[in-house]
Image (tube, rainbow over all chains, first blue to last red; front, side, top):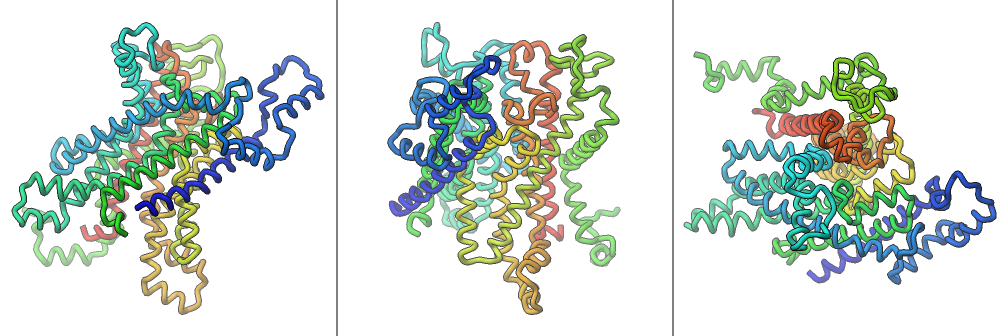
Length: 318
Length: 302
């Protein structure tokens, strides 16, 4: 098991290097450079001044040297400074990280706590009216663009009914900060979770259906075990294995989805920072986000793999 | 009383041996059993034709600015109203469908092509080629796609072709694994051995003999990928990182709905494009589901 984890961790290193190399190269080959984003285009600037600005920011060195410098500093925990402010990138991202984690983890918990029971129910009552209804719901939920759904629930619950706030994470005047935070969290977490609820529902349903047809289920029943033990001990344990696969596969998409959802709800997370950094051509910040975001995704995948081994003894002892 | 399930043995024999009951016909029959997919196919066909005929049927120029008619509600002249620059929403929807659907088709085409070629090579060659191609697939699978797409779009510039390309080059991993798996089983079959014996080149065996046998799952995967690519494009364009104004796409038409005023009092600006994306993606997903059923050779006798 430990060897398995170590191997997975070692594989992550070239992946991270690859991702940072591609992003670094991409940003540095970009047509517009940060200097032109910093200066006012209506005021003429002497070429010598531009040269000086480039030198100050280290932009006159070749790309690969700049990558190596970046890598060396990144290894020391220094991701550089945002071009247009004196805030270190690491601090900028660190400030945003808790908000993104709160959003993504709540969306995931929501998806699991709704999708899995509904999927089990759907499978146990296959071809019932509710099964058809849930299957149809799952189709709609994966087809509706997350941002359109988000706009829809903002329209209904914030604009029309006024139950939930339109955007942001905190209301400074709130009496109970935690309840206020939850009130702000519900809409974005639902918008981000919807597609995953459907995903978990569909996968759980098919996993349970597959398990139900297996011989060991018949054996368990033939032994005279109670239906509850047959379903949960024999059935659910086995269905769990394929459900962890979908958990790990949906993690990169979860972070991607958070970009859009954070932007719509002005949720002060990494996604919102990324979109505004693209518009400001703030490459150091974007590099940092690519690195931290990828690391998070890789770590969550690793976690899912470990869960996999916990759920399936065949993997643990292989 | 004639009940097809209760037909006599003679009748069944006639049904099975008659020229009318070909595997293709059975596939069509299984497809038609999925009502939602048939409805979806009709919707897609209609919208597809509307996109092709956009220059003929759109009532106004989709990019023409009219400062005298800004944010006007639906009227006889503008059936779905006008946007913040006085452009006709209905015409933008029709032209936007052109962009959104072709981005979906081309991006999925790129992804499926890469996935199929790499999957065939990986499954057919085996050994170290297979090993490294599968490691590459794993690496691409763990890349947080959206971060990379945003990166590349920011750099390459948000043109329609760059969007197609960028969505395509990160979407091939699923197809690759699928095709590899199928190839592994097909390459053990006798006809592959036979073509090897007559001296066919590996490329010929892969593309002429193995590919036709793995094409069904590729079609199904490709269908779902079109749906995914349409959603990706819509998301990117919505953020303003995709296809830029004034070129209309269903995604960027929703960008302005982020203002509360538009959301609250101008539903004609944000409901139609959102509903159309949902409708198209839903239809494609139903279609893919039915195709999976219809093309599964294990179900051929049903």
